[in-house]
Length: 271
Image (cartoon, rainbow, N blue to C red; front, side, top):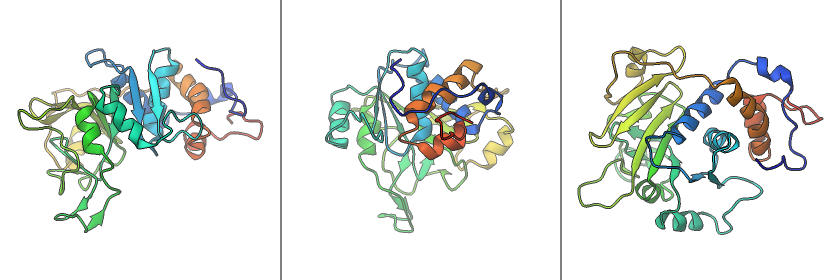
């Protein structure tokens, strides 16, 4: 692990260990477990897009746990590896040098299709989303994509997206390196079965039920007879999240760090 940059926050006070687990910390730990999934292709180089604090926290958790991964964070204010913006990200991805990426969508359907354009018939002017921004290229050229969206509701998780910005599956003969590995939401974790183009419920966050998730999901999905709970971060993971991970993220995501990991005093110590 590299040293804490000058001016970054000091490690959290011992009192921070008594704070309840925050939902964002649980999500970061869940994403970290997916990144380290031994059954998946190795994630040697992970890229994280802008305005993605929870995926960024997950990636720092993986790296600061001692795993040899390279991180490219597009929103990092200092030390951003890309000097020409997204162009370099797309070049690396096309060359097969990005192993894992995160994507979300204004709409996500049961075949892992993403809509980043808008609702209604093309061009989707009923409700406008930010735009595709190369998501189709990243989705098809990256071996692993983890879908992430905190909001879990029928308006986001729909039976069929109104417009396909990035397809979850492709017809035979269409070259693509990979597709969705999983979908993580504020309610649960789904795995994606690419061969069947269908999600499978893997775990439920605390307080959630299969019936409640079905009611909040616009698409059908499979579920085992017994669905386990999404594990909380371990004490070691919490210590990393509230200390070294926070230190790495504080410059780029100060509000997120204060809200999730605890406020920072004028002395630079977590309260």
